[in-house]
Structure formats: structure tokens, C-alpha cells
Length: 298
View 1 (spheres, rainbow, N blue to C red):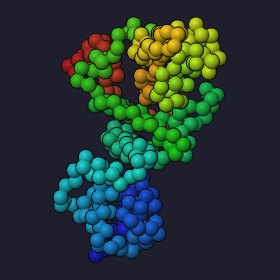
View 2 (view 1 turned 30 degrees about the vertical axis):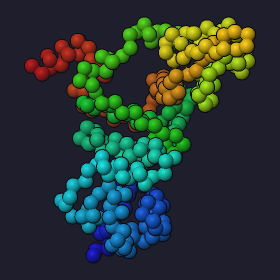
View 3 (view 1 turned 180 degrees about the vertical axis):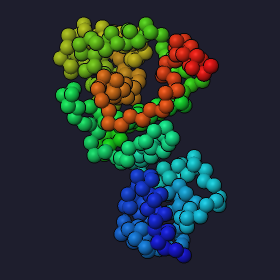
């Protein structure tokens, strides 16, 4: 058994997954020092090879540097890999996996910088004079990705292109205008941030007005506008002196990605931009672009 080769292969596949020696060791039941010994010329116990291969998402043949063998079902492999990751770490590990995929899916469409996970999710933009999110973009024929990959904070946003195009699934423009209008009202963002900081429950307007130190009338108006947009739900509660209205937030997972996407839209400058060739269509294809493309293809 070629110990050096196995160690090199373990190192190769582990680093491709942005996995530490400690993480691999925990997944297969050995110490970090044991993994380090493997990668420096030692040999893992033969009985551990299936677990190591499963964790790295490869075949046992691949650990010996051999081509072929039983092909890996990537969906099954990822499922089994995730099952070995603590629940609290699964979203972070998925983001790291997407980061690896992003670097490889752009092959042939431009050089991707040699860069790993960043230490900080923000970087100083000297021209703008403020910090911006260190985003990475890939805009290719089949869709686009917008990501932030850093130890302090990360997210991964993947958008395959629908057959009918993105615009086909937008809400009517008037609904967006109503949403942006209510978001622009003083106190609306503060209200949404407060509701997202609490566990799900019903609130009477008087409680929210007191917490946010806002006039009751303004809180009631904002709640009714959000209700009309299906952001809130409303219930009637029976009190000793009659009925009263109580409100609850419907979309508890929408605000955070919405505000991050808005920040990405407003900021100037990113650290990584990977765009396909000039034939990649605009995100919202219009008739003018189609005519230009047809003329270019003639």
C-alpha cells in the first residue's frame, strides 16, 4: 500500500472541501494528530478507508489514485456527509461546499483568483469611504451566484435561470412600490427588526408602540400596510372589555436575505467578480438584446 499516495489524496480531497484535519478526524473517529500523520506519510487503518472515502465524497479507489471504480452518487454522498456534521454547523459547511463549487464551475470562463475563505466578510472601499461586503459573483449561461464567504459571516445565493426567464416570476410592479413605500416609513424597519428578534407571537399595537417608542397611530398604520402585503397576519383577541387586534410576522426568514441583497445592490466594488464571456445574456433579457444577438449570429 503506497502510504505517501494515500496521504496526498486525503490532503487533496480534504482541502477541496475546505475541511480541516480536525473536522475529518472527528468524522471518522480519530484525532487531529492521526490525520496529520496520514497526510505526512503514515497509513490509516484499512478499516477506516470506507469512512474516510465517504466523508471526502470519493471512492476508495480514488484514495489510491486510481481512475474508475464505482461512481459516486453526489446527492447521496452529500446527504451522508451532512449526516456526520453537527446540526449547528451544517449551513456553514454547505456554504463552504458551494464556495468550492463556485471556483470550479467557472472553469473555461475566466481565471478565478486563488483565494480561500476570507477572514472578514467586509472590506474597506477607499473610493466609497466605507466598508462593503466582500462578495463573489459568477454570471454564466445557466444562471448566476452571489456569495459572501468569510469566517465572520457567509451566505450563498444560487439562481439557476428559469426557462421563461427571471422576470416571468416577479410580482407586479405596483406591489413592489407599495412594499418600498411602507419600508420607507420611519419606524418600519425598526419594527421588522424587532419582530425578527423575537420568537413567533402575537402583538397588540400598544405593546409595539411602547417598545419602539413610537406614536400608536403610526404603528397601527404600518401594521395595516404590511398586512395588506401579506407580510403580517392579524387575529382578533377577546378581552374582558371587548375585541382587540393582534398582529404577527408571517415571513420570519425573509428580512435577513432581503437586507443583505439590498446592501449588495447599493455597494460599490466587490473583491471577486467572475463573469462569463460576452455572449451571456442580461439578467433581464429585453427585445433589444435579442435583436442584437440575432444580428451578431447572422
